[in-house]
Length: 589
Image (cartoon, rainbow, N blue to C red; front, side, top):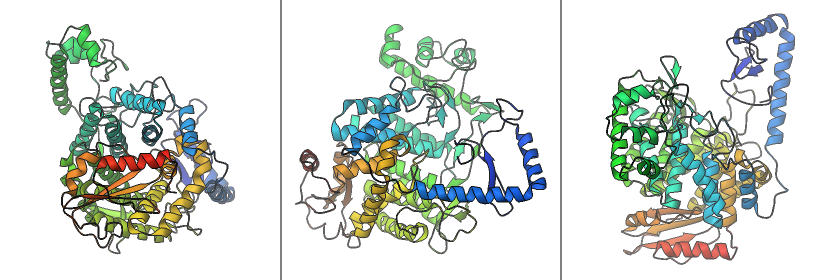
């Protein structure tokens, strides 16, 4: 970013033997083209610079480090100058970059932007603004129907190369599928659209079948290429489809999938669903149920055909941060009422992470492969892990997860806090090999580790009655208001937290012998600022839950930062409390 003014992939950075960067760039082609030198030309230029201009290179490295440090200081504090109704201003900023025809927040290439979509879902829940829900659903439907989604085996590709979401970069990443699972789960809870819950189930099934390691974790990614050709594993030519699929309803199935004799992409076909099944059924005079059965049968045939192909390679390392995102995804699917049968998978995965990534000193490792963990964990490892434990506690009622999350938060505060005790550094104190310690504030392909830490501080501050954590979370949010308002697509995670703060963050504790039985009921109500917890046990180590279990009948205790209200006995009454406070402009800030 400092050298070229933009980021990208791949990243190539040249450093001195002391690991100080002096030159970098993104893609350099094999042969010079489009005013970009070839990779070989770059290598030769670097060699000449190092051997013939050694002092200049060393000076440039020093200057670059100073420039990065100065940029870091300037980027961390941008408070002030915000509009009175910040959530509306953030919404306006998001929609200013929205593609209202095809969905998403850019032309091409198109990335999922899951956090921005979730912001719109929550903004609709708070305000009733139909345009917010409409664009969120446009994005979700376009991705689910497009070629970015694998309609045969489930799971999402990294991004779409075109504006209409047809042609993906076929690489499948664990973190993308985790984040998309979370967003589709939220959309299902808000809208009740079973298409979204189907996407969630198919995506989790894909991750469990194709990215799970024998040890119990999840691998990072599946490559885009096989046999040296991108997408070869995933695409089908028309003649192949004609041969593979049975004749009954075949033409209707291929029309539903948008397949053509000449191909819909580079002379082959990407399976996608550009038309409603009702329209295809009507066109071909087929009952919808019969057509649906033919589609399901055709999927199984193509799934078997893919097994005969050479599959793309798998990146078989297991990153802690990406694994914790998948735990959060599974927990969110449970919380949103999609499938309680995911509970054993969630418990098993968290147990594996605890065993695999805990260092002898009680900290965390960053990565593991073949059962061997290494490299000190970074801020996102801690932040996402704490978040996953909190979501798992909400999903399952296993309160030990809150104790573990609290312990990890205390370690993270000690290891990653800056001198001003506001934002957290990405690397831990004492990592001498890092020339510039960055404070990760940007919500990119993954949520900012600092925004997740803000959530962790805020929620655990309420649950554990640690007021200093709540104060720090508020100070972090105050410092981000202005930049979030102006650049909402790049800071949508912060936007969600600011929207919660304006509308109030509530905890709702379900206590009593049958508390778990209400889980399905609470998942039917979409209340984004209400964190549900349930307990059928005494929880004296958790202040918010202490002495709550005292009666056979379930009582629900609703609390804000300032107060706990008299207990109620139904989900509907919680909704009424929240709605009345919103109407009366009573905020828990």
